[in-house]
Length: 469
Image 1 (cartoon, rainbow, N blue to C red):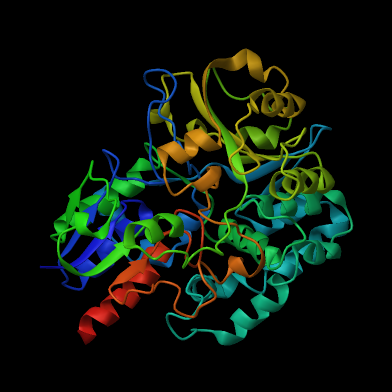
Image 2 (image 1 turned 90 degrees about the horizontal axis):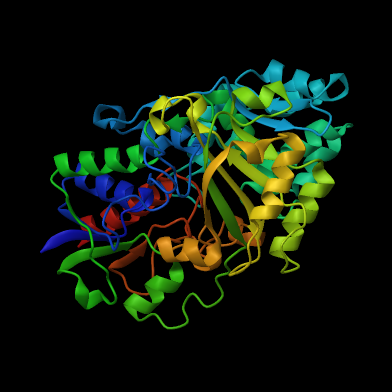
């Protein structure tokens, strides 16, 4: 009998398996797709030689993850590549605000009236970042806080809505960039704890940047899988699990799946009936005949580029998708251009480019034209660079990854109390009604992102049970 079986070979499932194997437990992973990866994959979606990331592409939470940093993933081929700027937010006048590794450079891009306010916001947390991110990403408590005072100060700043936090800024540049940071998790700007979301992304950039993985996001998953195999773990692909009886006998079962899928597989009925899924995304992967022709020079050297004319436009787009059940006319967009630092991603002189906008859950329309109209506002002539495109709306994203219910790439709405207490209002979110069954997906704290911390935290709950039995 195995000690643990993990269902789903995304970053969280693989991290949970690695953490258990490192502690001497026998582990096997079962994955429905023909390769490992989940939200960290790389595929030729458009033309031969163009390697795209179907989901996550830039990894501020990955390089800052306490779980990943404790593992020898570089030994297994993971190499982080840093663009000159982690992120840029261009404006229609050809200028841009930036999120730089340097706090001073970032503050200066906001203008003199807001530079001081931004520095006062982030600088108190940076010297204690490693401790803060460990404590924040271990909520609810899987370990005692290492620095409860700093965590409490962060909570005071971040738990109110982001609109409250950005009220300290006088001009639109800082407000717009910060609104875009919140938009990465598809949360309305007025929501609970959205200030913390924006702060985490900003602090992550200043601490270690927003890198891409050389060769694509698949490199993260492949490194985790290779390390797991060296630890004696097994990985079985092309193995769809429809019920617990499909799995071999084990002392514990750990699911890197949506709560909906887990309830169906394990027969939990309506146990997760109140769990809410959020807005979906419409994503386009581009093969380009050269770099994106950004008007703002800062955007040409940034790995990630946010698209939204101002905070009002961004807020309107987020509300349309998440609350008004309609596709926005001017979608807020997140774009990533890996080729500016990774020449392995496309043929010489060409580039891959990744872009998405938010749409209602399960939306079946085509947002391509709206996305490209937005891009043309900030990069005139963009369409002339397009060699090929691969589009994926909510139905296609859900078909590729069953965790993306309705196209929700966060595996659950990041709003209200569900930001922190997911998938149930419980201090033991990784447990389930069955004492031997656990959940470790992005539906559990700390939530979305390729960081492995949900798997890491769930593994703690699993090995405590295994040691007791």
